[in-house]
Image 1: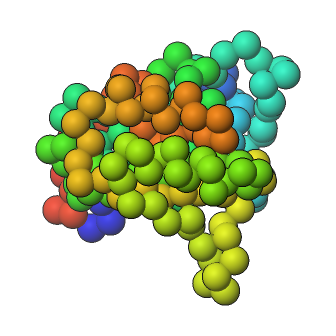
Image 2: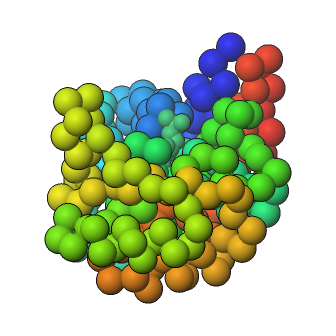
Amino acid sequence: MNAKKIAGEKATELITEGMVVGLGTGSTAFWAVEKLGELVKNGLNIKGIPTSKSTEKLAIEMNIPLISFSDVNHIDITIDGADEISPTLDLIKGGGGALLREKIVAFASKKFVVVADESKYVNELGSFPLPVEITPFGFEATIREIQKFKCQTKIRKLEKNEPFITDNGNYILDCYFESIEDSSFLNTQLNLIPGVVENGLFVNMADQVIIGYNDGDVKVL
Ligand code: 5RP
């Protein structure tokens, strides 16, 4: 069975009439957005705030009415995926390069629900390279500062060796750590470096995690 679909669709059970919903990015959040489109078609009245241009496109295709930060003070709930989830529900996100908008939307949400398949649940964060969004200006200097945290780094590239450019016009630096022992410390320190726009550590942000299993089971943490 499709564990991502199971998790994504399960999360939509939390959505009720009139909610403002943050719409996540990636192949698991996709199923939540698609299901919401179906619910909207059947009469559910919600408004969505997308976390990326690709999700915005999907939401428009699904006829989900969209709203912007200028129209609302808060978001009721956000459903989004993750690349790694620790036992304390800290996350690595940004595998799809949307971490900045994802963090802004999650931070503005009353409830942040993470959906993932079972492979994303890990004992310790850090096997997945940590994505860090950095400005193109001065990127060499920014990279040197980031490397002081004892990681190998790689600018994310597209197939033609062109740098991947985020929805905000920046680069993604993938950082390979041996392990991340103190995600809270690393999150704060990385964001103090000029040139770092945001990093993919989501510490103390997730309120609920919904894990889908290949055998069809689903667990809510
Ligand atoms: C995008 C993300 C995604 O939520 C994360 O990469 C998980 O993606 P998927 O559900 O496709 O495994 O953070 O920036």
